[in-house]
Length: 209
Image 1 (cartoon, rainbow, N blue to C red):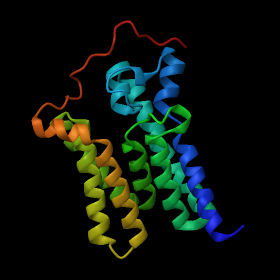
Image 2: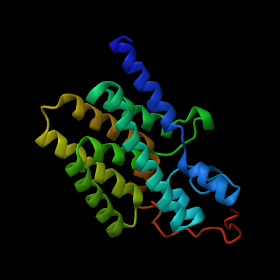
Image 3: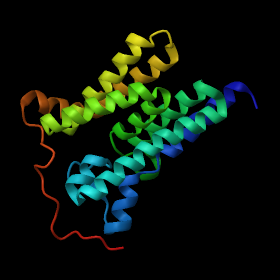
Image 4: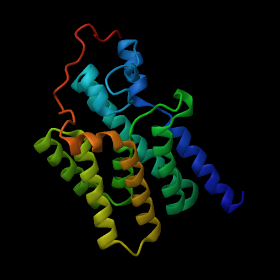
């Protein structure tokens, strides 16, 4: 197998892994519903939390976070650090735009954080703490997500700027995160962004295991 072909394999593996939508699987298995039909329409942690409650939201975050970890591990196994970066990036692309689910996925925050923890554990942990602190103070998940990942990119740029491929990956993930949060950013600037516990989950929806 040629070296360049390995990178294409990493791309395909990452994208297909990203297609595994934790929120869709959980909402369909537990509630015989599709979370994308409610709330913001996104298959992500925040929408799961608002629509179905805390536990499904937490499990969605963990599932998507682990997806980022697996992507890096598989990519590294296939083609070293460069394979890890390619597989990780395309796992987020697959999560955000899943072909298996009509290209309607999430915003890639949890998966990106899983990747961050794998490519630089200390910076990933620091960014996670920053993100949760901002979420706690502002009650805005979008704001915490963006600032948290900005802090990760800043740490990589300042302290690991010589590792070009890692910095490019971090910047690419941040750009995609900003694109996916364009509407949230607009609402934040207008002061109309939803607070974390502002919306209530539907009373009629109970787990049907």
